[in-house]
Length: 366
Image 1 (tube, rainbow, N blue to C red):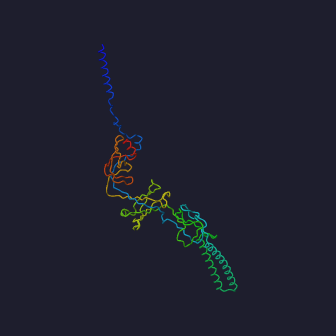
Image 2: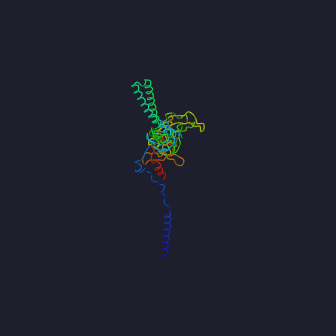
Image 3: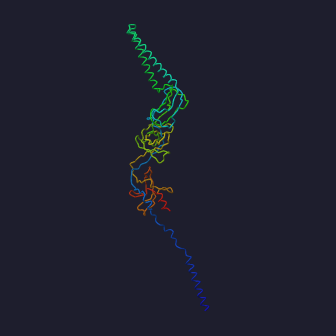
């Protein structure tokens, strides 16, 4: 009886050891069985899918330049009289209207012009009285025709002097208080100001007191280096961007090529003319001028928004269906604005994700 119990105990112990050994066997790791990524409906609704095409290879040339006002559409206001500036009403950047008073000058010349007019008016009245007297004397036989004729000449000369004095005073503002009013001849912005309160000015000063420009169109003076001179032509369309408006592109064209090189920095100047909506472009702003050149060579092209740059390599997301997408590396030949030219990795007719590519790329790599 005791032997049977001992045998059963040994069997039980043996079975327990086997069960423990089996329970300690490592479980199969199924973590590598990833769920295939599918583009969610929320992204699919707004997803842009671009088709790979072939097109003429283009490249961009960039020039640095400075915005300037159009000197052909400005009004320079020069001092017409000598005197002291007593009042300045406009400052740099102000918008002024035609006829608006920009400043006032106390001038002895204006006082003299007014005095000359008063003297001329007095002389007219005096010669008129003398002429009337000579006519009465002639009718009474006490004066000759020569006397009447001389009196008539003096009267007409007095009238001519009065008209001249009036015109001189009118040219200089027609002010009878010895003041010369500086007025704007056009509507526009004050782009230059060379006058201050208390300043003495002379009529022979070669510098304008004010320069007024409407700024509806502006110039960009850009520098072209020697290697790019042959690629720039008059009439070429260009895009202009600024630091102030990094997301805004202004359209213009090459209006003038200065066919000489600056002896200091060895660049050729070109002039770009462009409209200025909302007066956004200000004189002396730094600008970048981009000129696009098209070659006869053709290359595979895709929207540059489809490119993803990671680990020193460009990638795209090739799209077939929301469930069938793949990451593919590509060799980029060049990027010209919104168009990228591909050397290898894509074929015409394939479709790539053109929006939210980085988001999908991250999800595929997670």
